[in-house]
Amino acid sequence: MNYFKVFFYVWRNSFSSSEYYKDVIKAPFSFSLKYFIFFCFQLSIITTIFLGVKIFNPLNDFINRFPSTLGKVYPAELEIRIRNGVVTTNVNEPYFISVDQLERGIKEMEDVKGLKSDEIKNILVIDTNASVDDMKRYQTYALLSRNYISYYKDDGRIEIVPLEEVKNFTLNQNFVRNQLNKFIPLLNLVPVFLLPFLLIGSFLFFVFGQLFYFLFVALALFLGAKLISYPISFLKSYQIDLHLATIITPFFLLLSVLNINIQFPFLRLIIFTLIGLYILNNIKGSAPEPVKAKISRKRS
Image (cartoon, rainbow, N blue to C red; front, side, top):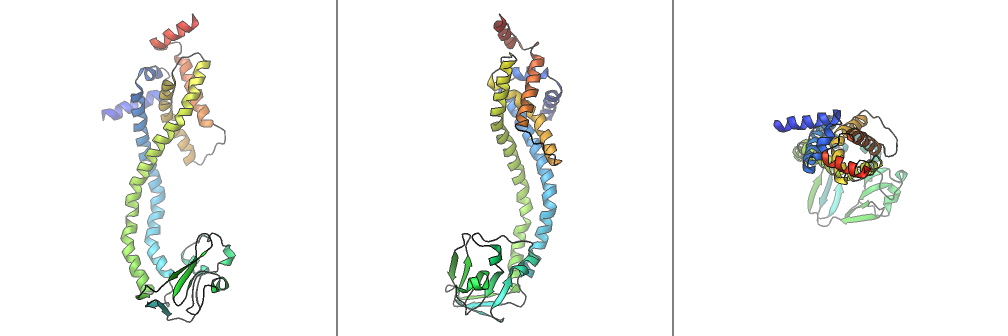
């Protein structure tokens, strides 16, 4: 609990008091780094809750509808039997499963790389008397023939898979539904694993992404401090920016949540630098003793 009190004390003063930055400059770098990391952890929790609320409702809806939707995609009347690598069906051939049929269950389908969308009219054509050469004529992504299944790879080439190893297999709607029922428990685990993934991912993003970015921000403040004759090291410039980040970062995240997009080159870097220089200029007259001595020696 004391750690929370210290954090909010530091955050409040980092936000409201220029004079507090005299203590920041005197404090060890590790103090500010721990403060910043704890801030990122809290920000990650808030981000996880926000994204969780935004993602989980559509995700749960998808998980609940996915098995029944996919089960409906498979035609109820179609049964495919493979015995010792030979395909037979219970329907008139050629039998077409078109893109339109799939889109009634699944909203959209990505085009196959290397093929134009108007070249693919069917997802699967079943014709035990057909050959690979018939794929273009049937305008299909996949062709199930008597002894093999052929389909277009991502680069547009045709892959042929022999069925000679398949000894006894029957595919129908009941089989599809049974397999989906086995898959449902795994789908229900998705939200359980997604939450810690969001938390860890956002935490690592906030910490390491910003720590790298601050190398450039601190350099700008370090050079700007020279212009106002405030002798400060690069490490202390970096330390000041760690505190400023706990104010400026939430502001930019809020703009993002509100869909407010401000197009201005290097806006964050400019804001960090201007606020940092404002703080250094304010504490310049009452700088800590080591800094005062440096300024006096410089003036003399």
